[in-house]
Length: 218
Image (cartoon, rainbow, N blue to C red; front, top):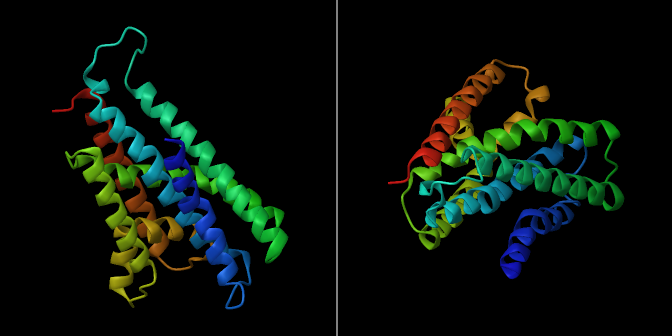
């Protein structure tokens, strides 16, 4: 378990730091560049942390057991959520601090903006990723699905189609969707309204899926 946590930590924090150093000589001016790295940290941490933990709990059959110690299985979700939120906030802070010390100055406003908006992006990322819980499969199989999902999402992150296809790709790819949420202050067209609509939709779907998970696991 300790080794697995170290591997997750490497992928969720060390990898974006390495990529940031590699991109330093290309185009790393302006704090808005940080948004794509924040999106990567949020999505990968939710996938490897919150989601994998729920899969382990579900596979153990915990949600089907009556418990006198816990009033509702939702307390498990709330605990997992707050732990995940804390981890993400710490990782983004460390990432920003490293960037500020070694690559380019990061303004106090950007530190604060990352802290505040990450509450929303974590909730939305969990809501989007919870749709993967609809797959009834074992932990090992689910781990393979997550890796394929990560690989596909990162590939699509580099795709920049024009017009409607760009909108479609953004709302279906978690990496691009979370990146777009961080970038809302930079969006001046009606796409911000589309993001708002899909944000609400994903939150509602997440609530439905997680509610179903805690009530029954057939």
